[in-house]
Length: 281
Image 1 (spheres, rainbow, N blue to C red):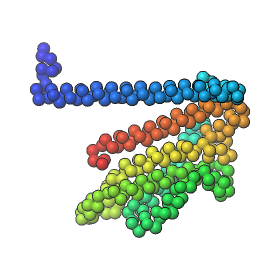
Image 2 (cartoon, helix red, strand yellow):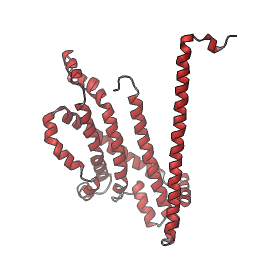
Image 3 (cartoon, rainbow, N blue to C red):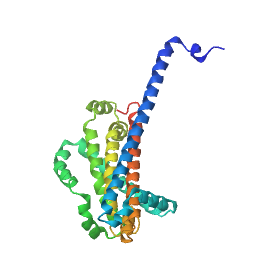
Image 4 (cartoon, rainbow, N blue to C red):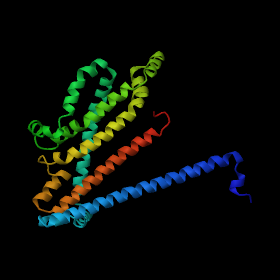
């Protein structure tokens, strides 16, 4: 029986050898990146442990903030399902705020990016509003919307709308005008131009804005959930503080960091998947 290599055409062998080398190099790079990431996390845990030990001499309660106590409490909270409801509620609020920001930010960005007059008229106002911390609106949000989820949704949407809107507008401005002229010359309707040329052409910018918005909205979420609600990770932090359960408090902080990292990774993978598609750029 002839070997599989002998059965291959001679001109295919160099190409297959190159593909094998590229695959091995990619695998090695992936393992190296994972190793560096793990090493960085280990250094962080060591510094965390040293910091809590240093604090124990002056603050005895700091003993509850160490990595060992924190991860033990995190395991107990997860296995007892004490964090399930709070985590789901927080993620639901993030998703709602992000969707509202998309509904507002994408159409506004399309309008601003497509009109030089509108861009000049709104640029200063939008930059002024963007530079105001969303948390500074908390008293007004509670006064207008009352206690509950409504002020949280307002604050999260306000935080997330700017990167989405500004990146959408930037995407519209970088579109090649020849595409639009060609579409009009072919008698394409406005909806066809929008959904077949404009939206695919700016999708990368929108996804970049979404990733930035997720990072901002996740940071703003925790203090927003301290506005008199009875669920969510921010509320649970206040609850652990009132009970002086500081190991649980640190466990929730670790969980918040892990969930935020996960959300950012998902957004990054979606963008990378889109950017690899033919014609995406």
